[in-house]
Amino acid sequence: MAFARLLAQLIKLRVHCPDFIIKTIRLDNAGEFTSQTFNDFCMSIGISVEHPVAHVHTQNGLAESLIKHLQLIARPLLMKSKLPISVLGHAILHAASLIREEKLKNSRAANEVEGYGHDLIVSERQVLDWNTRLFLRVCPENERNLNLWPENPHNFSRDILHAYSPNVKQMMDLLFKAMAKSLDLEKNSFSGQFGDNPVMQVRFNFYPHMDRSGVTVLLQDEEVEGLQIVKDGAWITVPLIPRALVVNLGNQMQILSNRIFKSPVHKAVTNTDKPRISVAMSNEAEVDKEIGPVEALIDD
Image (cartoon, rainbow, N blue to C red; front, side):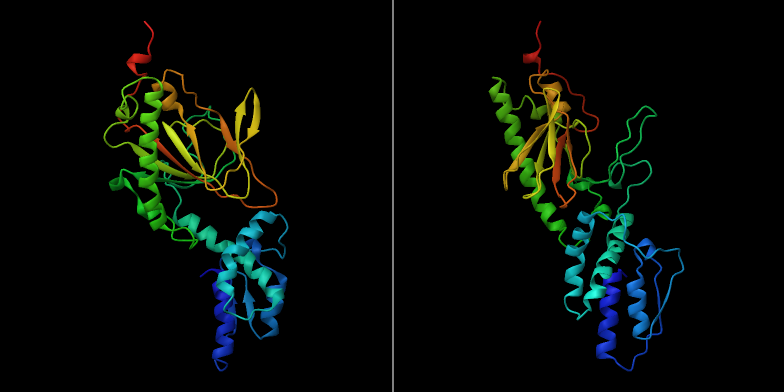
């Protein structure tokens, strides 16, 4: 059970069941988030705290943005209980266990791309960027691995992603046709090369790279900038336009258009004061589909 829930239940038990005696709390998952203040609080109400794992009484090293993110997750769990202010902050820190457990449940397998974790290492020459991400396949629907779709935090709704995916796919289809029309090509010149069951994937969090997709649609954070692209050898921040979608062309579209449409190098930078959330959904050709430049765009 996540620490915040445990603490809330502890207070409720003492209020509603005063004759029920709690003698010991065993913090199996507390780790480095254990605090002396929490220990002292438990001792003041006659409860001993056991720490079967090594721990320290500090929160040093936790980014302010992480603490704020944990506050958003932990506060709804604690509002129904009258917790002392001195304990609230420590309960918030322990809510990290909820995130950590959820990540472990949704971790990618050793040789798979889907799930939570670092990118798959495929070559000893690969540049290893610092990053963690949640990567999910959304289309074709019969290939979805719902076991990897998180159930927590509660504001991550599977139903929302179910509804969002087909709408983005419809927009991508229209975009492919419009791009073909802009080059005086038959409307299905690009979309036809992706096959009858193109792959759509959603990815949370980024690092510097080029997309391999045909097109990627990004829903940005409404308050915190972070997306940057390379232009004329320099990193340029993409301005925020509330509730707008950012369309980024990938390597497959660069190939299909014979480099008329370019795939830009881009990344997301962190913010030291505020957390940033973004959702990217990409469209790719079928796994066994071979693509190439549209014939009308190839010079003799």
